[in-house]
Image 1 (cartoon, rainbow, N blue to C red):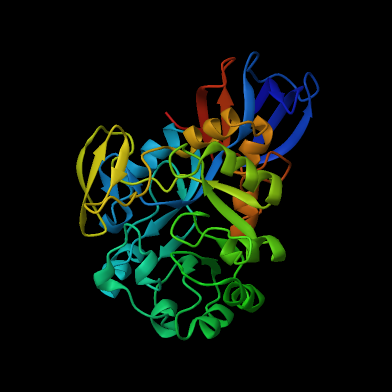
Image 2 (image 1 turned 90 degrees about the vertical axis):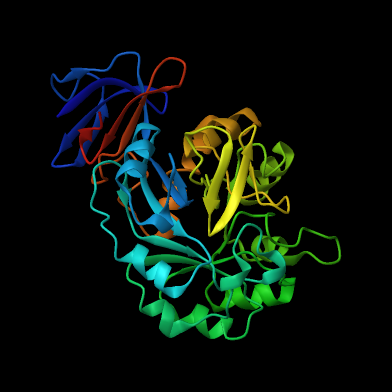
Length: 353
């Protein structure tokens, strides 16, 4: 397959695609005749490494068909379904569910809790919070990322030995504890600023430690979880190669206001804002594409906002074939119209209809 006359990084470009891979990126008019895509811009498909659900479904349901179809239509071509703080049996059920479904590709799972701090649990269910358990974690297939609070007993050994990307989150840890966790192997902050101490000039906390060690930081750029100026602060401090845009979407995404189940608790969505009964923000109702556009509206260059939802998360989770447009990469693409709205989405070399 050849796609002609796409605008890519400011230049008219032809893309050659074979067997689900990009095999050539060449100047327009040099690849031979294919589908004329004049007027369309191409960007990589989005990679969401932190999302719980959408269109009435949640990762904990273990039913991915509807979610993967919705995400694909909205530009997310790869994702890590993110589990909640629940029982071992409930999380194990998710990891044993069918993930080979049409639409957005599932690259593994992100385990957000139960190894978190009760004080910073946010919308997580405190009933199931427990200390890190290496044997338990290793028995869960497909876990690519895990979020933990590094102040919990056994955390440092867990970080060193779990063989997954460890993110610091839902934590009350101080700067020194986070520095130790990062030196042990932790390499990201989970939804930075949310469910963790903020920055104080004499107590810089997890965010100061992340800056010192130059690790990755996740950010929910929906305009609710972080003020636009804080999004800019993170962008200027960490740059597009270390800041990762996530959706943190929950099952109300793509639907309207109402009451929804989230991690075994009732969540009320009003004016698209999801909250627990005690008022804590409970994930987002935004797609990752909307978060990218919001980030650009805050003053982050559009190309960098795209990078932070494509190549950067792919690099962070160790998926070098995702999130980029270059020879050898998977042919996961978004074609944008003149208004930079999604026109078509390609996953593995095939357009998703």
